Amino acid sequence: MYLDMASADLAEIYMAKPPGDSDGTQDDTAVVTKPKSKTEKPPLYKVLLLNDDYTPMEFVVLVLERFFGMNHAQSVELMLTVHKKGLAVVGVFSYEIAETKVTQVMDFARRHQHPLQCTMEKE
Ligand code: TYC
Image 1 (tube, protein in one colour):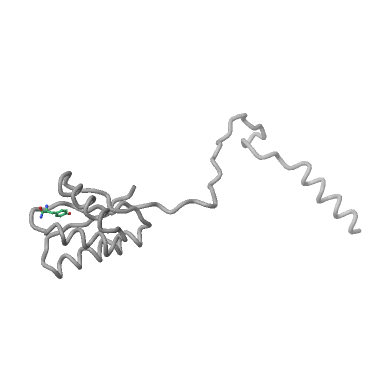
Image 2 (cartoon, rainbow, N blue to C red; image 1 turned 60 degrees about the horizontal axis):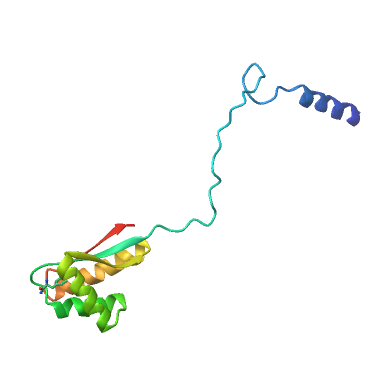
């Protein structure tokens, strides 16, 4: 009894149409999709410091030391790059860290009444 039912089911499977067009034929084209990597890196964001005519050089140096972990010589050099070129990338971070740095710099500048601007953009 069970055996009979099993062979009836098998017959149905063997007789089923193969996947493809409704007439049972299959074309020989295929869509090739790249398998998505399971270890995708998070997007990175550049933090930019902008020049202005009023923020004191020493204040910018302090910002770079305090919020971007640079030593004094590195900070002076990067401050002068911003001063001469108009802007510079001061670091590259994940979205959350970049946003935190921008907020910290903007708050610190506002508290000291300097017009220093700091922004972020996707790499
Ligand atoms: N240009 C400013 C000055 O001459 C110095 C400065 C440097 C300001 C970098 C902003 O992001 C800045 N006092």
